[in-house]
Length: 390
Image 1: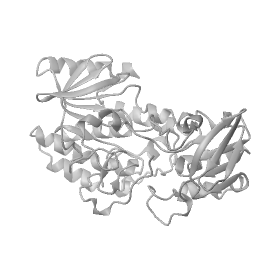
Image 2: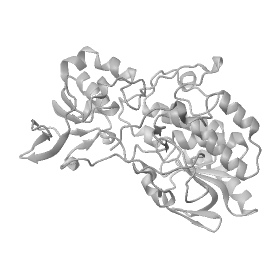
Image 3: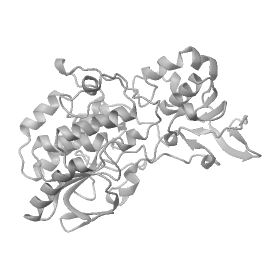
Image 4: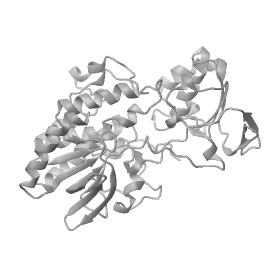
């Protein structure tokens, strides 16, 4: 898709050469957060911005296992003033354009590519960020191709490509579910899955559908949580699949069973739990332990919270480097998380307004429009609990 944006890139570069030589905003990441904040920047009236990605638009979604689908349903509800749960922009409905309720990752990546083209967003693909520093009033964004300069940087690189591979002795012997291309192609009949939240249940369901035996371990019991917050309890979509006959037949659940170690001897994997149980299989265990996230690559530009996530001000901006912003599933405020699309999209307009105001661009109409669509969340008192992480 890179060629689709060459003309836009050249036009932007030419305009900048005649002015300051730097962008007003560089957005790092062209996934749901990057494309979504890019549309908000365009809506608020910011023109000199660029979105860059080390791969292609929506590449993290394209990397999902073939069978994995969105747990949040899409529904074309714009006509009654309610935004599709999987939408990242005002007036856009993936359900209406794709005619799919629970899209696959590849489906959604194509959706992101389509809307990036529709809004004529300035996207440059295959541009890997090597480092970011700030000198005087400009951020220096060093890439594999060149050094870019910007007054503001928005880190929107996401988390799926950065799985959590630690947590107990021998975790490196496991295979993370984020590295699986297709569950149907996995060899073996007896699978051990460590982690019982959404990705673990998803893996168990698809393996069970192929008549594989599955034993699923979790340190807690997310399928028993009495909460309506999908950051804590499983989604309705997962509960539905857990009730299906193939899951009931082939999956054994081990709630509140922390794994202490994994070992490999004579081609047999052995899982030990903290309560002394031992489980064996000749199939490599699957690790569904969540994601570390990409924010670790810019940790020097943010102060840290106690949980390791970046500390942000009320505009999702760094407290130590003004002009450095965060968008996407790593955003945290107090005990509130924004780890789903329908959560973190509510902060796009907060960031766009903050940057526009610093550039002396009026934002009243923009804020009113986004607030009307539920895309401007400045009151955090309604938010829930923390996401499950490493």
